[in-house]
Length: 196
Image 1: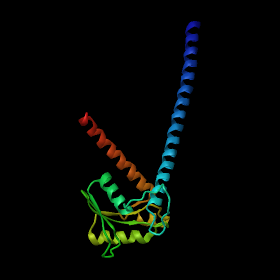
Image 2: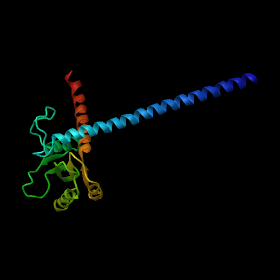
Image 3: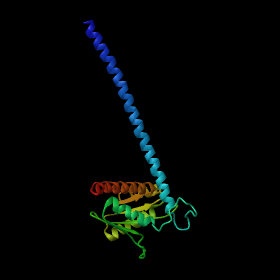
Image 4: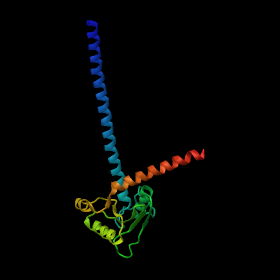
C-alpha cells in the first residue's frame, strides 16, 4: 500500500511539474505572438510612412532624397494596381475632367466601385466621403473607396459607417501592398516547378 501511495505521489509531482512547464511554454509562445503582432504593426506603419512620403502632393515632395524613388507612378496608378491584384476585376484612373469628384473606378464581379484617391498632408475629413457617396448613388455603383497615404479624421471614420465606402489609409495601403506581394509570390511558386 505504501508503494502505491509513493507512486501516486510521484505521479502528482510529475503532473505538477508538467503543468508548470506547459504553462511556461504557452506563456512564452503567447509573448512571442504578441511581440510578432506588435512588430508587424510597427513594420506596417513604417511602410505606410514610406508610401506617404513617396506620394506627397506636388510641391510638398522632398527633394534630393536618394531613398525616394524617382519614377512616374502616381498614388492613383499604384492604388488601382493593388486593387486589381488583391480584389480582381479591372481598375482604372480617371482624369476627373467632369469634376465628379472621383478619380478611380474599379469593375468587379460585385459591380462597379468608385473612389477618390487623395494626396494631401492633412487628415481626410467627411467631404471626400460625401463626394464618393453621391457618386455611388448617381452611378448606381456597388460601393466606393476613399484612399489616402495619410490618415482619416475620427469624424470621417464615423461618417463612412453604413455607406458601403471603404476607407483605405496608409496602413491599409500597406496591407494591400503586402497582400499583392503574397499573391505574386504564390504565382511565382506555381511557375517555378514548370521551369525546372
